[in-house]
Amino acid sequence: SKRCFDSCLTFLLYTWDSMAGQTIDPKDHKAFMELQDKMIEQHQRAKNIAYTIRHHEQNSQRARLTAHEVAPLEDDTNMYLAVGKAYFMEPKEQILRKLAETIRTAEDEMKTAKEKKESSLPRRRFASYLKVPRLLQRGYFLKKANPRR
Image 1 (cartoon, rainbow, N blue to C red):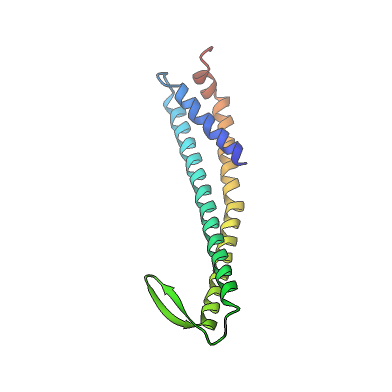
Image 2: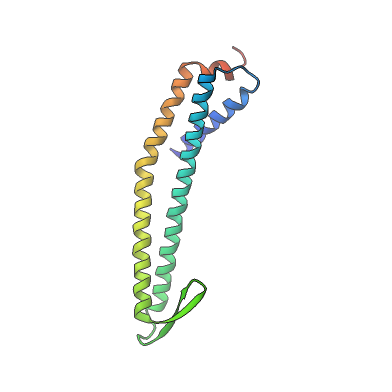
């Protein structure tokens, strides 16, 4: 799906570059530019969602590792909790509770982002893919990009 999207976007960009200096129908030009803008926007959204998922995975993994390291310590051990640039002394129980909350929150956010990625993006991409053949049927790309015609 991503490969198809990238190849379609590359095709649009290449076609546009190959049409330099040729007269283009303003209606087709506007449709082409809108399609190109939509595809670039969708590609950026997909990258942002992937970044969000990766960020929450890292936060969850970091919290799990910290909880794993803190768990074997004695129960009456006081530890320092980083809050911004400050550190506050907290009991072990409270730190473990906050780590568990961080893990839950990160997993919920990952789940939400994955659902968003799986539900909305493919439909939008598919809608954009459907517009390319319409422009091809009108001969927009073929007569402009093919120098033999």
